[in-house]
Length: 368
Ligand SMILES: O=P(O)(O)OC[C@H]1O[C@H](O[C@H]2O[C@H](CO)[C@@H](O)[C@H](O)[C@H]2O)[C@H](O)[C@@H](O)[C@@H]1O
Image (cartoon, rainbow, N blue to C red; front, side, top):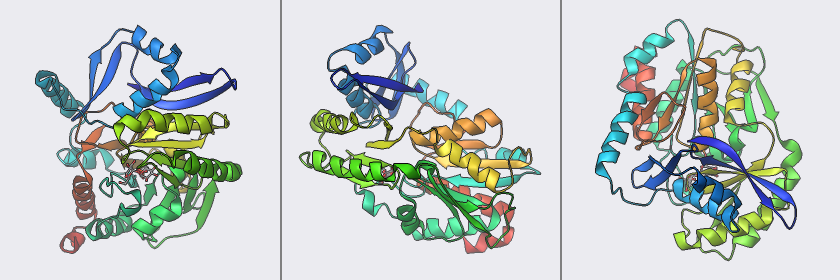
């Protein structure tokens, strides 16, 4: 499965909406199961139909919403078994591979990048109550004394900070469009340093405010829909919307977005994410932070990025392309990913982070 821009052309207003959804490879169809995503062969023409048929544009959105939001039970156990063993072979647990990971990092500066929702905090129904446990906070605090550590989230930076509450970290909010980090050329030292702010999409602020208000108004009629203002982007949550209403919600969002060709739609876990069409994402944020830390074009850096969402794939991809460090996908189920390793859930993320701390500072063992 690859990420592609699907151009949904609106013939009336002659506006193209770029929908950044995870579309299957031409000969592979990805279907949702209780276990996540399984790939099975499908005729190539299936995709074409989605793109051109009358209701196809909204249908494509809703299909993508379903694929992102597995609710069905697996019916093909043999396929599931094959899928699971392929997954483990290709994306082994970062906990099982801990020694090999440490060996690969020898002589290099480890830099840690952490997504928030689904990585440091478990996914919950109410996005305003996605709290991080005290144990996780304590672990991340210790981690930041050992390695430069950044949080890279789709959320507004202030909101994610209000959950994490650790001053010793760098923060990239709004999918990396709002960064607080070290100044260029500054080498990380324990205890912090100069702070630089980078906002890739500041000119979009008024537009995002406007779209947020319209989305609140439009989606008001759909029970359970929730619109979240993430400063440089907006999230429309459908976790608490009945599946039979997803089509209606997709139409409402589409009717607002068609007036804003400079905004694009991407999708996360039961959330539609609206953001500027600028070429900036979590991968660019990772590069920006590495550069700010003084590691641009360095071979002695070992970035580790841990995330659970499609938007984290941009960062995984950068690491793969650079051949530096690696990505860890947080998922219980097989998914297409550019990450090298996997962890099943935030508790495993915490165990992995603890092991990193214990390896770097054996004296911290008792404190964790
Ligand atoms: O990049 P992230 O830090 O992972 O942010 C992505 C989105 O995370 C939040 O939504 C997700 O978590 C919620 C709380 O567990 C859950 O209710 C929702 O269904 C998930 O999609 C956040 O609320 C969004 O604004 C972020 O875009």
